[in-house]
Length: 154
Image 1 (tube, rainbow, N blue to C red):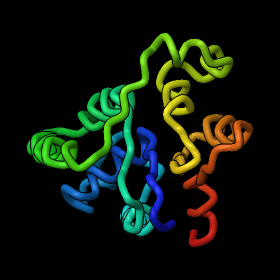
Image 2: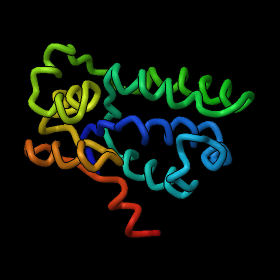
Image 3: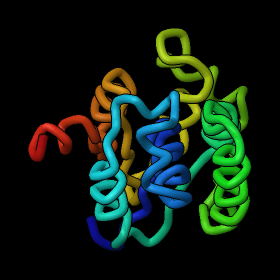
């Protein structure tokens, strides 16, 4: 994926932050049981050529909540990394009133509706959420289901 912005969904952002802190924490983190350290490497490969990593405040809030599902001292180290990485992300604010105006809001919730609202023709969604992936595709947005990528090497 070259020269496009990648919007990284919550679960993958947790993987990115935890893996950037320590690959060993991936196996210990309660919210990353579906992932292996190699997934972190694949994620890095998918975002390495992107112009930017786009997030929304909703994604960052969910990421903050989920990143805490590990004991200290790992938790503190993960939050140190999170604090450092936030400034490298392109944070795009989507008003909740705009997100709830989307028909997908009822089915997917606020965060995912805001994600859909934040997508443009220059942004690729990267997610593990099948419903969000399908909703993005149905709008004509570019989207990658990370689980399909994983299926190619697992």
